[in-house]
Amino acid sequence: MKVRVGNACWHAAHVTDAYVAQEAGFFAEEGLDTEIVSGSIYTEGIKASRPGDYRYDESPYVLRDMIRFNIDIVTDVELATVCLDKIRSQGELRIIGVWRNRLVAAMMGAPHVKTLADLKGKRIGIWVKGTEVGRLIELQLRKGGLDPATDVEWVVGYKFGSNREAAGPLCEGKTDAAIVRIDWASKLQEEGFTKLVDFLEVYPHGRPARLTVARQSFIDRNPEIIKRYWKAAIRAHHFIRIVPEHYPFLRYCEAKQRTNNPDENEMQRNLMPMSMYESWHSSMNGQPSMQGLADHLQESKETGKVPASFTFEQLQSMLRLELVQEAWEELCQRDETKQNLERIQPLIERFGF
Image (cartoon, rainbow, N blue to C red):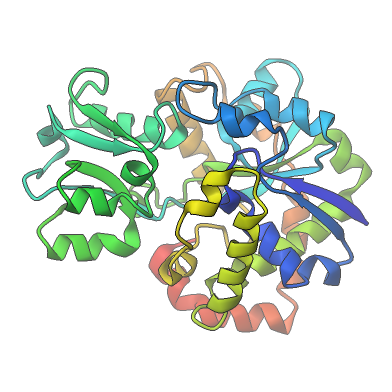
């Protein structure tokens, strides 16, 4: 069975799970002949996702180019994209599972910043303005009584805003606050920095900000492909979390993935440290919680990405989760799954999922 998997954003990391599943042989073992299109569903998306232009992964172009380039499954689509597709009366996109289910990060402030209100007149690191994470920071600032447009200074760039890199400029005094991986939050606190927001605590039901989607017509024709895809992808979700045992293989996958990526910037970034795999953000069963979806829909309304009139009932009509649920039920009967879950149980308790 042939299937083509792509990512709606330009990041190599946004198709990591599928890439690991392919390199580890999980897709083949589940009976799929899988092609992964990394960062090039729409070649202009690489350029377009840069500051000053439209965000490809937050636009109607996802559906257009799934059709244009024959992409069957996309791993990292914003909830708002699916909602807006429904509003436009196309209603073709369906949520078949979740890719990024948790924001394993914290918003950290410099030692002189004790509260969100203290950020007035201060510098905040951000990768790209206008993104889903950027709107999240703006939401937190408003909760602190600040106007994101006038009360803070934005320091834009990968090093300043990527949660895997932002701790560096923060420690160097180049920013006063930024979102960093939860892995490094405790170390920063030991050095006197302030944890302003812990997103694992803010979103106890998960934050399904990046969803896996397919077209309704494809699902109806190929339900078995969707189920087999999830068996392989969920196995990859578990595999990624098992470090240090699997870390050399994961580094190999990432290096190969970045080398073959059409975005030259991907080849210039450092490979992910082991702690990022241990705290990988995917759902252990490929599924978002209903409360998590409801919470994220409300947040999308508050940040202006989704109209306030859009209802949770409308969102529910876009769900096709029965196949990932069936895949999970079948996986749970396998010894491999039971052993993996036992191995990573401490991580599940620590990070959720």
